[in-house]
Image (tube, rainbow, N blue to C red; front, side, top):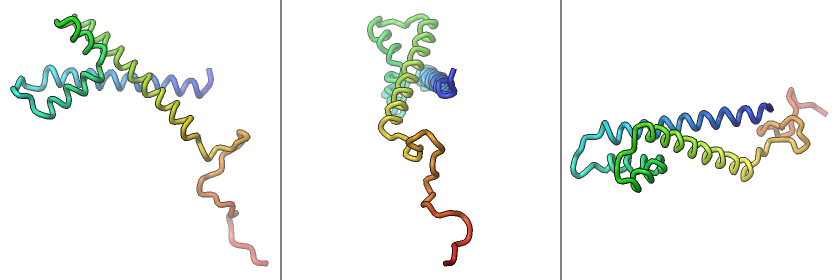
Length: 128
């Protein structure tokens, strides 16, 4: 397995874990921390909308079934949401690499030149 593939797998897993934890945290805040106030505050609305978009599979299940799914389904759909957003992040990173390639890289695969190198050599200037 190449080093590039290993680092991409690690970044995908890290993105999936972070997205899943963020979605789970928002779920906890929206449903267990916020008080049931009428009308909800703007911040409560914002957190609820962000959670609903981030966990879109669970939002779809809730909207179509009109009742609470079992807790195991909530956990499973939260993990699916985290994996979905990890794929989105990975696709954005791939697109970024194609849109803005590394300009400092050597075209023939050799060592890259530093960006600050203007062609001047190190040491004192020569006197002719």
